[in-house]
Length: 266
Image (cartoon, rainbow, N blue to C red; front, top):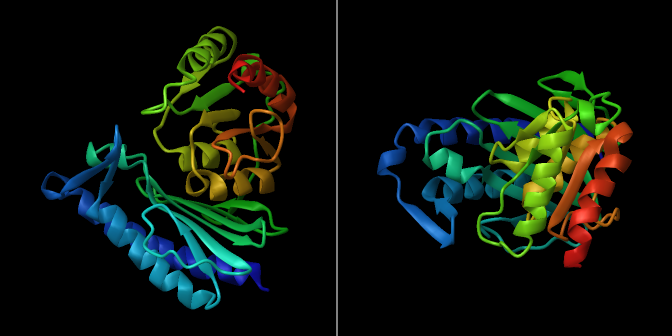
């Protein structure tokens, strides 16, 4: 399997879909916005973009299946599955904010082997494949070298419909406000993870995410030298709806803070 070749073919497809998504944002006032739940939106752009991705990616690996947010395909592959978020940051998108991304990962059996996050507003493509470095627009990237939380910039995502862990989440916010360089919330988990991979953020955490939100970005962080886990320090971040990602120096301190406040909810 030539992972590099597949990765670059997928990038070409993703960038083409990105052109469509960006063009359509100029018409956003005329686009019908549907609600999948409280503060959980989808547009015809999400659906059309995903259909285009599914159609084109299926031609790269004929035997592949899909785990896609809008369920354009329910086909599951025995060995290979593309994990797709066609527009991560839809709320930003419909409000004409610029942080939104396409997230695509390829899963081989139970392992991610390719990850691509294309942040459309800045035309920044983050990617990696099995046994490769991590890249941003062709340049190798690495996680930051911050040694502790005091010198770190932390990213997170705010809960928008599942508030069961809200109080403990607010406690983590207070901790990081008092003990770090600050908190940032971009509104796109895929972009947050990509920014950890290139050192713009030192750490990221969020709960109630899905596989398509994190699969590509988490893999890129790992290939960039970072550490990824769930809130218990285990590896159930893909389908476990909680994720921690940081550089290796900060991870243990960061994990202890998250685990301290969230373990009460287990």
